[in-house]
Length: 503
Image (cartoon, rainbow, N blue to C red):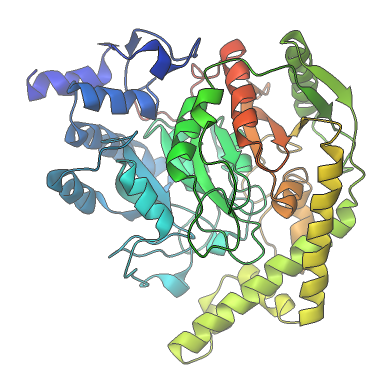
């Protein structure tokens, strides 16, 4: 096949010879023909393995698509295309995703020789001296990392809007939020630039952007993937268009990181196999009563419709709630996030030898730092104890139910500016504004449980709506198996946003 023919192939139908086992029994993508537009990362890797296309050619397609839509969406924060080309020329490790183009989130991760800005001018020139463990695992999986994606400053917002990197716009409607803090990654995948991108979730930052952009987003069990530290609320994984990509990526990422405070003893395999067969009959609690927030009627309808579908698939669905005190939960989370933000910025100031000025931070971050500095060690210790109590409470609930069904967010993607920081906000007023939208996701960051956003439908205005399923600690494989069953019965891959990188 000539270079010209191969480039044409990327935009045309291709006769794939991927085995049924690799594709997954009854997978929504189990078709003999696919194009880059419809291919997931697993398909792209099989194309490379067969010699039908090279990693360089896939990179060329991804970068062409990036350049086509980034001026509209502002999804990219760091360009590492030159480094990606060097990596391809040197030869890639053999892994499940060898040759697949990939983007890192510009937060909570290091890649040697590159900047991780964390969405902040404060770190605009912070060059990493080494790869973080999760970066090594991404590279060992064979991924070709060619940039980093937009994120709000230090991931402290539920929307990817900020002064330093600028606002990231939703491919489904440019006037609406992508969600945060993994908004750049979600926009890249939703717009068809790449089929999968790195994301992190400390309060909903994988699941909310996934649902606002019509994608699948798994927040794994605390400690299952590398990078967990501090309270352990934030975990790392990916946003994807297919369930099997999420599962196969989890196979590559899972495993205890030596010396880490979390994750020892968790299962590190079985995630992909769970997607190839229907799950056993599950007992699922549908919970629309806790927390008490105003749920958009279309979101409520989607969750109730998904409950009917789950019942039709043979599962038992029952209304039930664990009795979580969400007012207290929000106070606990505010304490932990604000105090850790203050602590981190104090470390940065000490390391550089002089104080951080308010002008170096966005007003949101400066406010959170000031409030975080007011908490005592006893306040933080009490918050950590409360967090553990939430986990015990949910463990009791899961003795009765295998999973919990809820909305991901109370509304479809809100307009830009609707949930951002406003002048005069304190910690309570700021967080209450965005937690009215993301009220359902925060619990599972407190408890450490796995929780997944599954695309389900679209609103009358054309915005995606997802549902959220959550399982007991270590139940990641079960969540992926149920998500794959829903994917087979209610496929979402054919849905395309307004801004699409393909021709």
